[in-house]
Amino acid sequence: MSEIHIMTHPLIRHKITLLRMESTGTNEFRKLVEEIAVLMGYEALADLKTKDVEIKTPIEDSIQPIIDGKKMAIVPILRAGLGMVGGLLALVPNAKIGHIGMYRDEKTHIPHAYYCKLPPLISQRQIIVVDPMLATGGSMIDAVSEIKAQGGSCIKCMCIIAAPEGVDAFRKKHPDVELYIGALDRCLNENAYICPGLGDAGDRIFGTK
Image 1 (cartoon, helix red, strand yellow):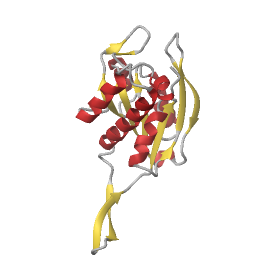
Image 2 (cartoon, rainbow, N blue to C red; image 1 turned 180 degrees about the vertical axis):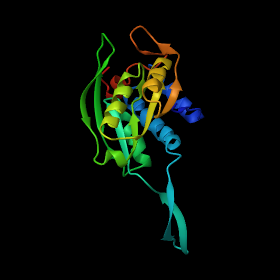
Image 3 (cartoon, helix red, strand yellow; image 1 turned 90 degrees about the vertical axis):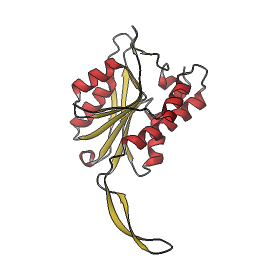
Image 4 (cartoon, rainbow, N blue to C red; image 1 turned 180 degrees about the horizontal axis):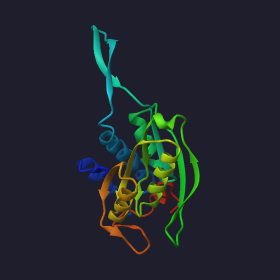
């Protein structure tokens, strides 16, 4: 079964509290999402492999580590996932970016895919799928399924807020994928919104509320 990593760092918890506040405006919300993505990315990428290379410092020649292995791909689930991309790019500027478009039927709460564009050689890449919210889990489940169908195998997923129902559904469908969660909330309500949650992340990031 895949590992679930729930963030406990005080900075992450503090910033998520600010995100939750109804009074937090679009500009501040957007910045907080990016800052949280940086902090969570630092944790999620802690197992990156390194190799030693010889460099020349202003003082002497030296053997030092650099990141080795697969090139990274960041894949946001549109549209809210776009808000987390900048934070991860601050850590790994050379990462390639893919996009998976999903929308949720407001009556059935079932996600529907409308777009998928992944970087080339996806089977050789470390893939980080990002979406601020993991509610029912449907969008993240379908996104990972599509990535696997196109050859991706080394996959991690990051979300800022998750509901237990979504986490359980995701783990049943993709037990091999690690999941990084900023905060695990109480439950979903009758409209499949996370409680206490933070509202609609996409609307709050893009100012379309």
